[in-house]
Image 1 (cartoon, rainbow, N blue to C red):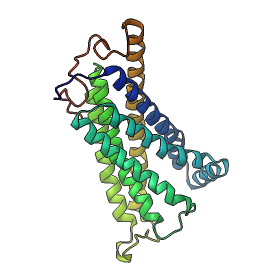
Image 2 (cartoon, rainbow, N blue to C red; image 1 turned 90 degrees about the vertical axis):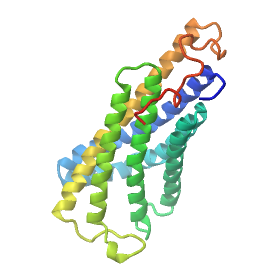
Image 3 (cartoon, rainbow, N blue to C red; image 1 turned 135 degrees about the vertical axis):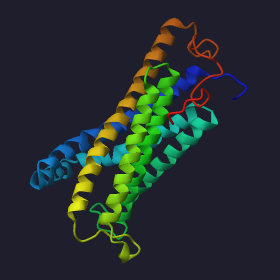
Image 4 (cartoon, rainbow, N blue to C red; image 1 turned 180 degrees about the vertical axis):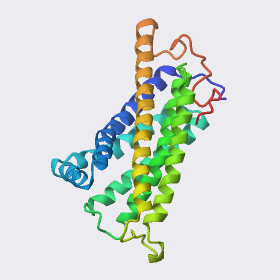
Amino acid sequence: MNDHGIDFAKSYRISRLGFFLLAAGLVLVCAVDLPGVVVRLLGRPAHFHFWRWMQESGMSTLVGTATPWATLAGSALLWAAWDSPGWRRRAGLLMTMCLVDVGSWILDQGDPNFRGPHAYFRMQLGAALGWAEFALLAGLSGEILSHLEVESAEESARSTRSLAATGAVVWLLLFFETTNLRAGWPLQRNPWMTLHAHLLWLANDVIHAICLVQATALVVAAFRRLNAEILRADAEGPDPRDPGAFPPDRDPFGGPGREGFTAA
């Protein structure tokens, strides 16, 4: 524990902006991925027409551009919001993964059709990091909600982390099933899809969609709870910028990363 109090006014406001940016990025992904999963279940023709429409309408470009930058900015703000080592380790790890996503986005601009020699590797790297990002988002959101005394926050965060771990295992099996490891570097996709690969792909998509919804719900809940706390303090506190008075019922030496939260 640090030997100085926390400026809750500053930390809450920075956290609120960080969670808002993360929520914006995740909601955009939900708007694309969830209909994509439903359309995929309807058959290959419907799935093909859906993604063709996504490309022609520019929706895929919008989501592919806004999401990595919004999540990078949001994770950086969360890292800066609280000074506890435990919080900063996890927020810093999330920020690093989001930075890799931005790097992949930059490389994608030179290979928009994903036909380059390293395109398959970039896609698999993004998929692998996605599961870890879900777990970190759930942990950070759950810790904020637990700090703000929201019931079942810790349990919800653990549930999402457990689902993310399950999804990571399914993705790993899918990776070995669909990758031609004998081809060496750079990684290449197998020219055919087995029945096992199709089933794993479907399971991966369904678990990813559920985990995405859960992580997004936690991030949105954290943003809304922080916003409500700030509005309450603005209405009741004598000076919301005074760390000694904001909020009146918070331990000045408490805070995320200092309270023994175990979900993350």
